[in-house]
Length: 360
Ligand SMILES: *Cc1c(COP(=O)(O)O)cnc(C)c1O
Image 1 (cartoon, helix red, strand yellow):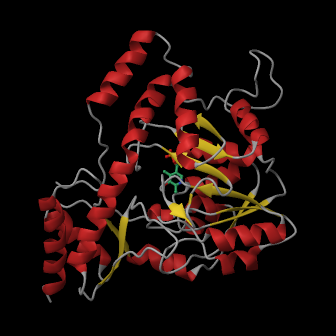
Image 2 (cartoon, protein in one colour):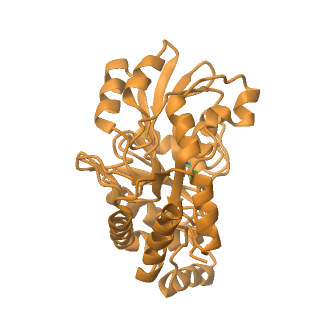
């Protein structure tokens, strides 16, 4: 079976973990600090705060900006549920703006329409590794005095206008095993604002800077040194992983060119796409997925249900009509693009897809 995702972990990661275990310092400690410094430098941000998941990074980012009850946050309905849930956790209301049909990212024009006096922030997602339209989004934010929190959980190292994602507003990254780099579970908040960084570090540790002095309500959302040790090695490999993902994407697009049932992914000018997913729009999507499965090729649907249509959101009273997002849920299919694929794997994916569309 060719899997849809596979973390690439080697001897360096194993040695780094062993070193931490032998040190006896296995919770948050010096490795976390070292990882934060390396990650902030990588993204071109002044500060970074490591946490135990991407969800935690989003949640803390919103809290650190003081977002809560009575506030509205405009976000994408076409994402992993954590994006919108992080807003709900704070007591604020997620407001969904429909997406662009070519990048699947939030559409700036639709954001404009959703702004009300209660709007406090915009939370774009850089979906599949393709940056959202940050030029337009930052302009809207500036004109309306809104905070920008970037869900960069799928886009480590992606650039927009020559700047890394996560450095436009407050960034949130995930290091879950399927992401472009991993720490097992883990996440990171990035910012250029000293006060936000300090608040984030307090919120992740029960609202304290000084032990047993709790200045605000916080949680236990810390990263361990074990995870940070893996992260430091993976960060060093990230640009290599990304180059392989981009090359694999190029091979897939060249192979799939001319198949009329497939719309391959695009990369807009001024953007680098880091291909967390290689997602096509496919005619007879579900039949194609079943056919590929029979050929031992794993695929994924990211995402089969728009967030506003999830039972948990319907229960909250969401009744939006977001046609571009809803159509995408019926047509998208992610093909394997991860750096553990061989040339033969890529050929097999292309050949099987061609065979499916040649059948009738
Ligand atoms: C993975 C992901 C998250 C959540 O990250 P976790 O580390 O799994 O909590 C949030 N948003 C998006 C877009 C993601 O892909």
